[in-house]
Length: 331
Image (cartoon, rainbow, N blue to C red; front, side):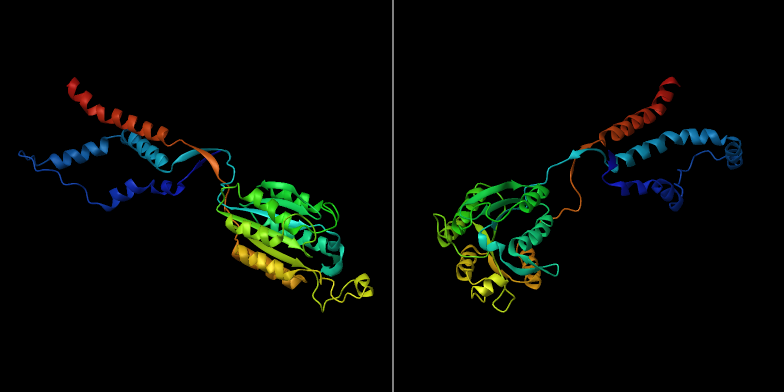
């Protein structure tokens, strides 16, 4: 596709005519011989000179000017879209799939829903807004697995997230292993910012690495961890099974102290998601702390074409300037 990088330069097309109209005529040097009827003779010759001849004489100059304007506007041939620049963030999402994520104590679009469904819903919106960032997905339960490596393909990350289900990685909670796996993926990337978003509703009950130990390693690798605790507050409405079991707070197993320490050690932040209001505040706060890289238009490979009209203008100028010289040689 052909386009001009500086199309505003074409607005200079009438400039020569404007300058000629505004400036006074150039004064000619006085001649030694004065003829009284010479002005009348010149006017007579001008009246008899055909208009077409004047237009033909000016046509090469007009063409040269238009070619120079075309070169100044920088025509370019656009090729295929270039891949996004790796100037955004490398962000891993670690999602808890343990058995407790099946607890129905949160609201989703006005209806009671399980925690994992709510997490999927708001994370799908979050992923869609991270234009310019590379995202990866870690699913953890008793063990941690990389479901998606770091990629610019945000649609695929959303798809793999939507297909996750309770118990896919086991029914326990290996928070430390999830952080360790994220460190392994992020530390090898030369990104400007490395971020881990850890979402869980419980405490570390499995794995070979403690969450605090993993957080210290992440801090050395300059990885910021944002921890998200999921579950209704003590005053919220728990599901019937939790109430019958005597657990007034369905999220009582949530180890908030450890999640807060993880965030503090790595320079991140801790968020508690218990309803739609706290969810909206969390998303807004994360966007402030780790803004996504948004581009107004996608970049394309551009092949400059301005040398062609510029070369044509120079060639015509050389031919035009050589005309008086040829006349003098033939005289």
